Image 1 (cartoon, rainbow, N blue to C red):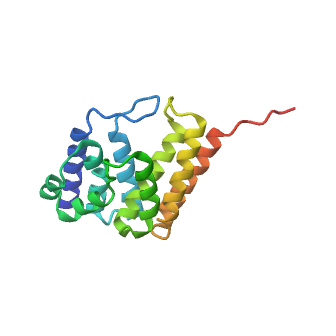
Image 2 (cartoon, rainbow, N blue to C red):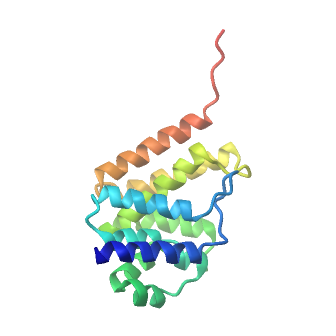
Image 3 (spheres, rainbow, N blue to C red):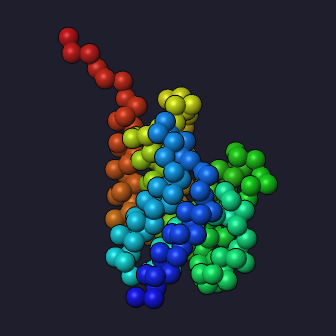
Length: 185
C-alpha cells in the first residue's frame, strides 16, 4: 500500500512541476495528461508490479522540461527512481538534431526500466499525432516524427511485447490519420 501512496505523491509532484506546461496539440491539454498516459502504459506493461517504475514514468520529463534536480527526485522518491529519470533525460545543452540522433544510437544500451519508459513515451507521443496533432506541425513534420520514433523504438524492441504492440498500433493510427482518402469514382 505504501508504494502506491508514493505513486500518488509522485503524480502530485509531477502535476505541480508541470502545472504551466501544455501539450502541443490544438486542445492545449495539460502536460500532466501525457505523464499520466505514460505512467498508465508502464503500469499495464508491468502488470502493476513495479511502482517505482510507474513513479519514474510520472517524473520522466521533470529534469528535462522543468529543471527539477535529480537530487530532489532521489530525496523524495529514492535513488532508483532518480537514476531511471536521469537515464531517460535528454541533454538540453545539445541541439535538437543531436539529441534525436543520440536517442536512436543509445536506445539499445538503455536499462530495461528506461526502455519501458521510452516505449511508453514514444507511444503517447505518436498517439498524440494521430488524435491531437499540433496545428503548427505540417504533415511532413508529423511523418518525420513517426519515422524517427520508429528508429528509436527499433533499439528498444525485445523489452515488452505488449508495449511494442501498443506503439505499433499508435503508428498505424497516426499514419492512417495522415493518409489522403482515395476518391470513390
